[in-house]
Image (cartoon, rainbow over all chains, first blue to last red; front, side, top):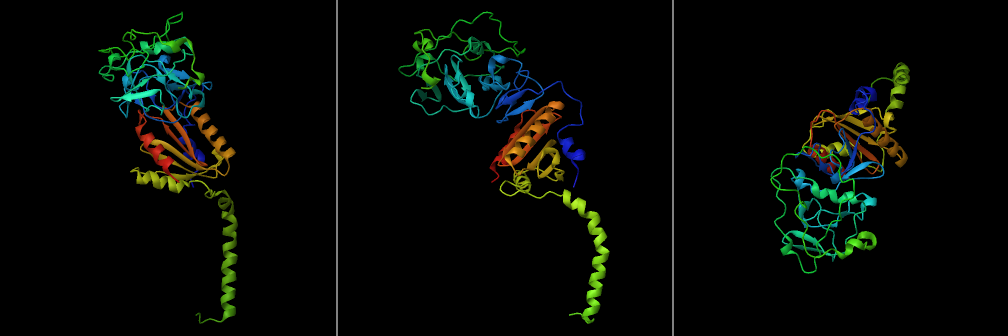
Length: 219
Length: 150
């Protein structure tokens, strides 16, 4: 039997120099710093040496765990993907406090998770549209996600508002609260096209639900 | 059947036991330290078999002293240049303590990536200290194999 000090503790790196404090925690897949295309595919809670470089695409839980809520494909993910148009419910599996989470990305984008079964979610031609009521962002900064630039070569789902199913209400994001300076953005590679949602929000009707929170945030 | 008289045979057996007794006493502390597998949860052997079936080289994994993680049985070593620890726990409380110990270990050093996961009362901890698996794809394969163990 090998002793803990000779091998087991080595496995945990206890012989190395101490770090400054708790390591940044992540829940699920996420782009790796500095958000220039490298991606982490670990789908359970884990830690990394580096914190997120751009908090506009993360939510931070009470225990300071970072949860990625952006378009993974726009930041380098190349796994199974599902197309969406506009804001929609985005429950985060394994995170009870985000079971009622919403995605506030405007326009076409991707997620790595399929839409949850719901009569308010219509999928056509591989793109899902949310027809239900949309609660206002719990934090005005949530709409900053639409200012994040995709990596070079990203192609969002080929869909636009003219292809919306009957009854679809385009979401008009609220004006950003001041100070409008978002968290630091990584020096991402120039994008040939803006990130999903940087296109002008669909004109048309203001979302009625923007002022009327949906009960529980779910359709 | 022995050709010797039975009484002579007994004397020889007793003599051998007498000679062996000091050796047994000498080794007994080591025997006491040897921790056995825990019933009711996936064994480290089953986890290693799953890794092997998944195409991983597990030859560097060795049994280690489990007390540092409040565990009852542990194996540790390197798989695909990643540092791997697998432990069995008798209780949920001990498991939680073991996971906490692992996380504290990561807080104390700069691992590039660290993951701890449990399946029943069996814990898997993986640390990447040398950016061997930047995107975590190898780690994810190990996690999936671990989760599939019954």
